[in-house]
Image (cartoon, rainbow, N blue to C red):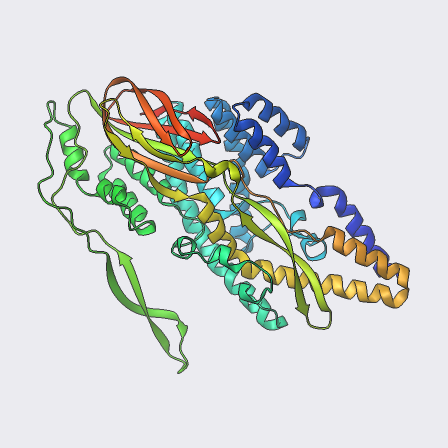
Length: 501
């Protein structure tokens, strides 16, 4: 057998022993089955058993989520801090190289699962947000604000890197004659990435919840300018949600009243009116057919200034933000798509698709407060839609890597067949066996994050949560002018994860 062919086979079989055949989907489903039935200790045991000494980023993200469900907040913070250090390392390396790292050569020979898992971009942002929630639960508001600031910084860095990566993928595809259009992947379910909910997202890494929480916390600490900026960003990401607009309107009045010893309720007398968008014409970075810079029409959501002060609290009353997380993130699975590769013919290559998790069918709908009033829950962020948008945005890079891998595998297979039939069959078998898409994803994140902002008296209260599968009750303790109460609904199990300021 040709030494080069032997080397390829040896490398493939060696890498096979790593993460190539590991089924992250089935491992996550095992954890979720335990979590959905309230068996967190069992889930933690299962999590440790499946990872062994392989403590990667995904290990720490998932473990921290399990510890949070047990209200082990110091442990949660320690675990997620380890994950955050790994992301910080990724950021440092990417700043030096100017591109994403962890792009192991094996991904061009075997599959993307041999690459170091650096996390999806929306997962990096959500890690900072969830660390902020954990710090709040531990009574460390200042540390929570540090994480909130990190969210903004992380988003800015991801944006710059993402724009560069797209350009590099397009250049590589142009040089080698590869396609970066997902529509050219015959048999790929393009419709899963092209729903209105996915296309209307600004990008695949920012989420409105992180910025709304940022606004709420900055408001609670009296930082008017930072709170206003946070609320505005949340509105830009989800311009049709009234709860976000109400957060921005009247913030100065709320902060003013909060400083009065005996505040009075300020009724809303002026109707709230919003102008949907403002249109701005600016020069695009892309050139038109005439070689000149084209004009680009940009529509930006704006809020008309209106004299209104919603949610002004009375003495012994609190401004309460309920954060009800429902379900779990979708999972990825691998499908094989035949790619036409120059000089290699048709080579089957695997690509990931995203599917909803059945556990997420039970959704939270509304809250019944102690005075029997009903407050609807608003979906402020869909992790499922974010994951689909992230995949849509990453498809050009995935397609280029897949085409390169197909060319390598096609060439090695053709060379092996020229040597002899047995060598060709062996290389073909190894190529097929190792061709799998990367199915790794932070599967314990919620599918949706819903919120409701209400006024409640201080003290203990029983809150009823209407779900699509019945009513759940939680006991909450209200203390202070601003309170955040996270609740997690997974399957038919509910976890009260109260955090207070």
